[in-house]
Amino acid sequence: MRIVAVRILTLLWLGLFIGLSSLLPAQAFTLLPPTESLAGLTPGVSTMADAVRLHGAFDITVPGIVEQYAGGNPATDQHRWSLGPSLGKPGLLVETSRRSKLIEVVMIDTYPGLSTKSGLTSLVSDGRAIELYGLPDYAFEFSGDDCWFREMYYIDQGLLLMLNQVPGRPNWTITKVILTYPTYLRNAVSLRERYALSGCGVVDDITSTYRVWARMATQPD
Image (tube, rainbow, N blue to C red; front, side, top):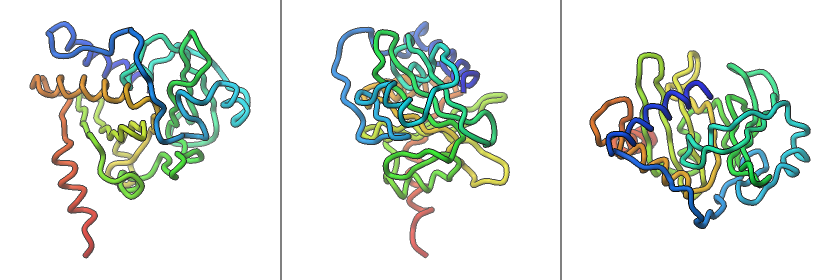
């Protein structure tokens, strides 16, 4: 996740220097919790004490990057749990502000043992998300020499889903489920939309085409 996030953030940050985009300013604003929870945790409501109570002691704390990737602030601590076998390094990640122990981001990374309150986990097809939440509010595709994946956004739920093509699995498989504040996700979407409109490639807004495809794919026979 860190390598991909750094690459994508670098590309998106380039937009700042050519006037294409702006990140959320470092100022006070209202952050309402999402309507979903993930691994029993809700950003803006749950604390690190809740996370430890539910999942035991975390394995390591490192500088965070997922919150910034999802439209939030860069100064976070990331707490990691290794939970079991999967396609790569498995686990649960939780990020907190360095000024507070209140959880701001929860992510499950290629680990199907944890889910949202509604039952969405990783390593399932994008069709499962549509069954649970309907068509996404936004969808984007990132493409590069060695980096190709999609994102699906459900803003009110606070969900950002990352999808990859995984051998032996459905065409697009949800590999990471990120839960954070809806306000952060709106900022992430705005940043990607502006970059897509620049015509620079790398990021494409596929919301409309994805919705058409998804409706056709889910029509009854």
